[in-house]
Image (tube, rainbow, N blue to C red):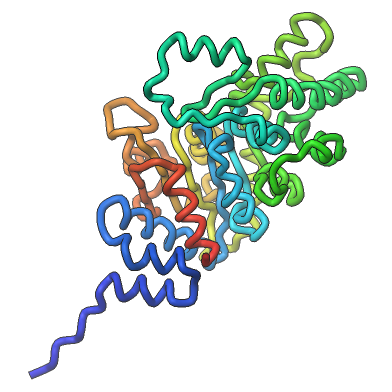
Length: 348
């Protein structure tokens, strides 16, 4: 009678994978075995496998990840070549820089759930803009960055030049004009890391961000003559289509694809994932591969008609993902989940 082959338990596999990593990864392997904890580990292992197979990874940032100081872990991911492109909201683009130059003036409000309307008015009177448990100081953060970037807007406008929002931010960072004002360790700024790598970036809907509002105001007053001095929207989609097509060509068949790691929902996720069906259905570029990996961290409950609450399989019918695409969804707080996934990928 043939002896039964011993079954290797998942926790043994995970422990073996974590053995060559640091204490955070070993902790995850030991304790994260079920439900959303297991989904977190599965997504992290697949992220790592995707890169080892020669793949590239696009990361999308919704919510207020920059104010939540995700840069502490994301910047290292960028420096170590674990992120190859970023799509973010205008708020995340600017708020990492706000934090870079005004961190010491921020105020934490741990009792934010109990604030009354009167309490909120008092914060407004002090020019403290609240993001959940954190207040961003208008004068030290927003106005300081406005002054620096407005110089670049006006200079480009007068020269008849146009740049994307992230390119203007790269210009400001590279100029060194903010360096004396840094209030955090520069290695914890994901925008600085992205700037150093000249990382491809796409910022849909930039107009609703604080700096977007400030820019619109200057167009209205006539200080900036050409609204398209800052390139947005459709031009970003064209740039994304070009990046995706060119990147896919550099990845030889069977040796890697482009992955999609989504933090939150909304426009930061919906905008970029649509590029593949556009390439296939509207441009006839059927040889361009589908996304090769998909993971989303979301606290949105599954619901009818909601993009953020849609399960990954729904994206198959839209031509965004394939039936065999590795798909993961971790229903939890991204401020908890993302640093742990990144720690695993970084071997920490």
